[in-house]
Length: 198
Image 1 (cartoon, one colour):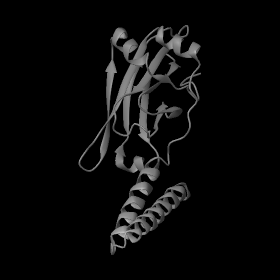
Image 2: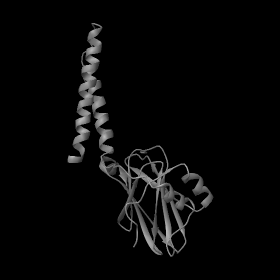
Image 3: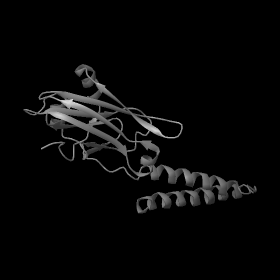
């Protein structure tokens, strides 16, 4: 609950500022707005709190160095390893950080459009994608399995899709390195916090 306190405070302040500001503006012209300033202030406050609560699980991520990004764009896995690349596209929920885990081990959080990459050992793996904060309650997490061989480049594209009751994360595997390179070049790469395997 404590992570939502800033969202509640921001919503309350927005409601107060809009209510008093609009009330003062209307009063300056000698008009009687009735409950309109309070109602609009409440709506703005609720909306601001909702947005902030959705962002409650988002944290500041560290960008990769140009050298790290270039190594990924050159598709050079470490010797005996495979390279796993995960990137986000799309406008829906782009400011909300998506938590990425490989084999239940957190590796990075990315917004849209961003990507990250890690080395993985040969064998079977699972990638988990989920949101934190209030956004986590509105979006179904997803798990994607894959098998990697030494020297493989495995790439997944994640897009958030709106649903009637819950949003979902749509995942697509990208096989073409040319397509992958064109999509990743303009994006910021987020440095992974941990390698998926040791």
